[in-house]
Length: 144
Figure (tube, rainbow, N blue to C red):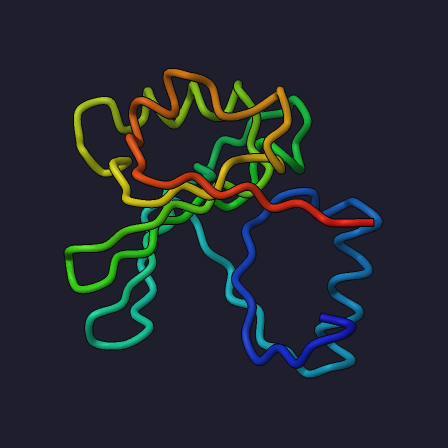
């Protein structure tokens, strides 16, 4: 947000008392960015055939590593024939809860998975990967 133009941003209620959250609030106020608070179950219609469904976090948040495990997890659906899941920085504990939350549905099935927490060993368990069953998995890394 400090380096690129942002019009709207979706956030959830996690880590409100953190230094990073206070910095975030200062930046969005200075740059007049609209923040939209989302929660599990919300849907955002981007355009006619493109929508975002918020899968996580739920209202009762995970207290262990609160910022990572309560990251927004969302699924993008395009024309009902392409989907992608973004997992933020969730770790094994959140993955387990998400699997349990959606155990009786195919909602987690997706064509592409953005692997959790930059591909670290704390995320993307075999069980989570099997539940999503992606054709492609992407790992976000920063080159130094």
